[in-house]
Length: 70
Image: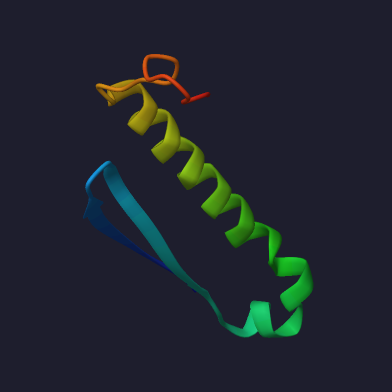
């Protein structure tokens, strides 16, 4: 079983996002190393979507603020 918890905390310059994930059950116990790729991919994909959305909706897009690079 996989569970995801996302915690968003406002900051003066945007948001801080923390994730908590749990991946458990008999298949995981039988092959924890082999099964690790599933939650890794899920987290990577989710953070990629979050990053793309944040960058596309930000009033301070990359390149519009001095010293900020994409």
